[in-house]
Amino acid sequence: MEWRGQRGSSNIDDRRGMSAGGIGGLGLVGTLVVLAVGWFFGIDISPLVGAMQGETQQTQVDPSQLSPEQRESGEFVSTVLASTEDVWQKVLPEQTGVQYTDPSMVLYSGQVQSACGGASAAMGPFYCPNDQKVYLDTSFFSQMQDRMGAGGDFAYAYVISHEIGHHIQNLIGVLPKVTQMRQRASEADSNALSVLTELQADCFAGIWGRQASQNLKITQEDFSEAIGAAGAVGDDRLMEGAGRVPMPDSFTHGSSADRQKWFARGFESGEIAKCNTFGEAGL
Image (cartoon, rainbow, N blue to C red; front, side):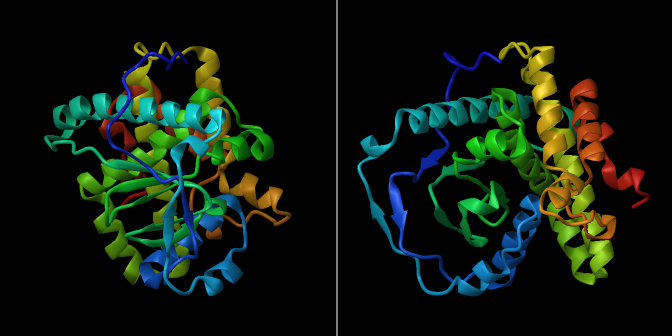
């Protein structure tokens, strides 16, 4: 993947030069976001949720304090975000008639406040539909490589494009509908809806990869990196890594095999209509 020298996005809110004195009250929506992302990693974060009280105070720090690695990761994220903008500004209206509006990408270190509540780096990247922003602590890329064995530029780009996939779902009305359905559903059915939502975002990430492959010179090796990353963040793999027996009814993001399948489907087809996970589930 050749990303250097490509256009960077102006929709970056880099807060890595800021320190957080605490995480404010989450509320119901924020708590659900935090718990969902906790499942993403297979981590029991209930003690952290209970400790998230008080107001957040942030102090501006000189951005020059960022390490060379942090600066490079910021440039990488900016380039990938710009590529998603270029792709979806064209693909979304062509295939759905919906105009694409750019989300913002918030880069942070340690802790962050969003319109969906507070979060910490341990919870991984997430999309907040309330403010249409993606939140990412770039140290997550190191965790992918060191803890999950899923390193590589296109693997990291897959993660970013997956979160942008949630933005697409928000724009076309999928996220609001799923939220309404989950409010009336049993726990098992709610989890199943969450899985379908995540797998569709994987498929949308694949569409981006296909459309961006020429400009970014995506190779078969790059594709294998992304497939490996999709497998590494499957619920079954994460549960096994945490010493738990995989329980499909408790999956919230999908199995490794399903995540790989849907990313590949988007990459191979390039069509939003082929990413209808809900339709294939009979919904």
